[in-house]
Length: 333
Image (cartoon, rainbow, N blue to C red; front, side, top):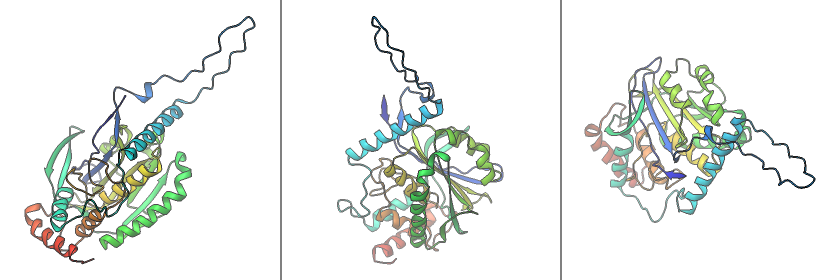
């Protein structure tokens, strides 16, 4: 039986290993209620009924358990996407006419998304607890590098083209250097299936030396309720990001996978929270939109405005946010 759960996001500063601050933005879609994929029975081919001259019993094809799980995960997310589209979710309008935005909308959205955390880590467990936070972003150039598991070979060409174009768009919006690279990345994007993700620890240690146990556990034990996630790190333990890691499920159908790229790569730049009160936006608990909207673009422009600085909290930042929102709606690019 399937039950819907909210799309969520986590952000928490940690001091662990070679990495300092850790920010998690996790996009959840749907949970399986009382259903463990690894414990599901293997399908069995039933033999025909006996007759006077019994037919030979057909030989049952034994599929590896990993393939059975992968097929079920793929089918699960395909059903979910179809249902959401049928319900009018995962919309693809950048500027929906039914949801015009105002200066006040931009101001409030920025405070809710950039200056608040929705979840915290307590005893290694993610706990929902909305708390005020500081502004966090990158100072160094962001170099996005894709890593595909063997299961995602067919996605390599289209997804690489998508991320290349999207990185250029993020650079244009933020006026901060953002690009896709083939090597030397500091924002790593792994496109893997269930089995590949659970065995990912050696690869993570290779591409992110000093990666901490908290990260490894979160990635390996990603529940089915989470379709993708991003973790951003500050090696200096402050509010300036130096590294990021995004996990995209290879089993996701195209629209859901593109929505994950849109959301996680933007959140990894410094927009960690989700709020049901922020519309029209990707950063919303309802999965109403599957693309970066005009409001989301304005939030990215504001995030990297030089008048705002990493470490600012709402009381200090609010007057500046209000002024920038007014300028953005007045036509400033």
